[in-house]
Length: 184
Image 1 (cartoon, one colour):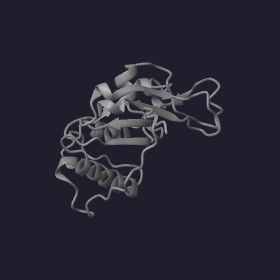
Image 2 (cartoon, helix red, strand yellow):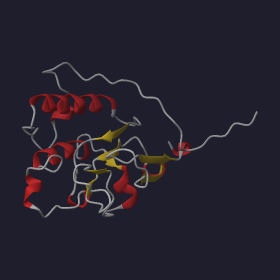
Image 3 (cartoon, helix red, strand yellow):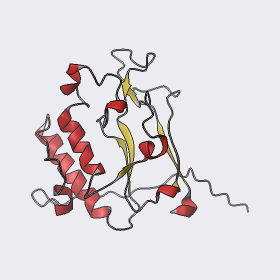
Image 4 (cartoon, one colour):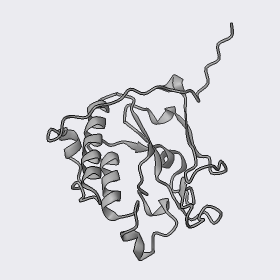
């Protein structure tokens, strides 16, 4: 039998439970940005509990990756129209939502945005386009899907991160993280 290990492997994830309401991790609460008054109290509670659950898992040398649709464009380069005034109230680009995402990236969690690690400030690299506005052909989008890596994932283990923009079928495109498993 021939065994072939490829860096693009499927992994399984275990469900992570956060602390009970009212007992959020001090590590998650220590974010330099106050927990913003989100559009919905349920979203605010989920955001706080999710960060607490990640803080409980991403300690020391833990190799934790938070991935998926975060519904927030973190930096101006992550959306097509940052100079427009309406972005201050547009879902996914409000200052409160962006501050909430920064709580993952700044101490104490200190996670890394894998795409920015590999591609720096590359512009026009979006993962979501409004179907209602037919925004995809003109690439008027937002980068709201992420791979956030805990400090236990060595930077050298990240081979590539891609947004598979040519793949259609949704208002989001798939994103791909390629890791060198030997470096983990």
